[in-house]
Structures are given as structure tokens and as C-alpha cells.
Length: 240
Image 1 (cartoon, helix red, strand yellow):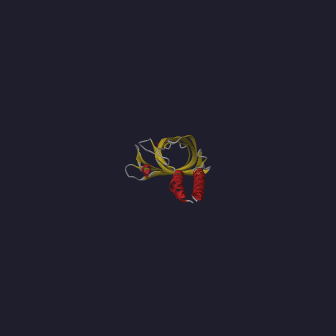
Image 2 (image 1 turned 60 degrees about the vertical axis):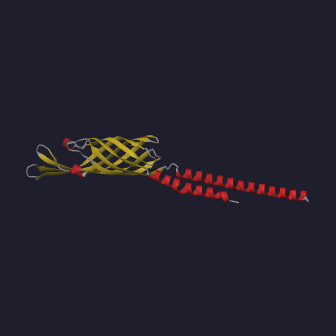
Image 3 (image 1 turned 30 degrees about the vertical axis):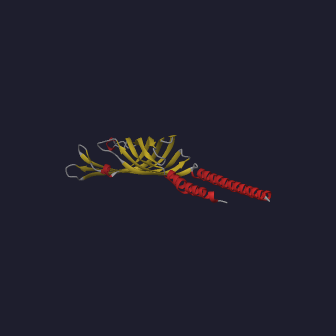
């Protein structure tokens, strides 16, 4: 009789072991499946995009202190393979640069707007810094008004077209994955021969660098996908 009970107990024990092993294998397979899905989603989220939008809010400041030609503008284009950017830019003289500038005989006031086609090439792209080179060519129009110093009466009002060329390196420091600072040093050349207009010359620009794509990537992965898979992995411990 005791032998019979022992055989039954052994049989039940074997059933429990086999059942536990089956549950463990199912859990491991499920976990491996979830990890594989998370890896696939991660690869898709962080994949290289061949084409994506390029936006640059540009403020260029002249080194001239007497009659600076500072401009505000925006560049819109497309970034190709994270290496090349092409597009168009539009610029307008800032309000400070529109103020009258006194010379020996007159008060001069200058206004200028222009558009450019630009090409930007990424020379170095590392985790914490990036070096680019930009060239541009375009055309625009300026308006020059001369006033009498004594009476503030308008003496002349001249408008003319002009061609513009530009070249300069751009350096970006990226202490974080999606935000940093950048600075540019460039030279603007026009075919306007009047030296008093100060259109030609070196300029500098600086501002905030923001990678919207990286923000979207990190949001999708770290706040959406990864917590979801982590929750499913925790729940998998209860699978029979």
C-alpha cells in the first residue's frame, strides 16, 4: 500500500515539475519575443531618415560699429542623409540697422531685403560637436534715403537691386542629445560699389540648436515603447 502511495506521489511530483518547466519555457519565450519586438521598434525609431526638414532661424550681426547691417532671417530646406542641406532663405535688415546714421553731411537710412539659395555640408558630425560649411547666393533690393542734417528734409530716395554671395563655417556644441548652441562666422559680398553702405563684410551669428527629430525619437522610445514593454515583461511572470 505504501508503495502505491509513493508511486502516486512520484507521479504527481513529476507532473508538477513538467508543468513548472512548461510554464517557465513559455515565460522565457514570451520575454524573448517582447525583447525582440522592442529591439525591432528601437531600430525603426532611431533609423536614419534620408530626407527630413531643415529649419534655421538666422540672425546675422555685422562687426561694423558705425553703421552695422544686421539682418534677421529664416532658412527652410531639406536635410539629406544627415550630410547635406539645401534650401532657400529670406532676410531683412533689423530695426536697429534701419535707424538713421549721421555722416559729415547727411543722415543716411538704409533698408534691405534679400533671398538666397543655400547649400550646407556637414564636415564633422560627432556626439558633442558638429562642423558645417555653408555657401549661398541670392538677390535682393535695398532702399537708401538721405536726409538734410539741419532740416531733416529728404534729399534723395534711391532703390536698387543687388546680388549677394555668402560663405562661412558653422560650429555646433551639443552637450545634450537634442539641444545645444551654435555659432557661425561668415562673409557677405555684394556687387554694390558704394562703400558707404557697408553691405560687404564679415558677420557673426549665434543661437540655440534644437533637434526636433531627436526629441520625437526619445519620446517615442523612452516614454512610449520602453515602458509598455517593461509593463508586459512584468506581467509575464503570471503567465501559466
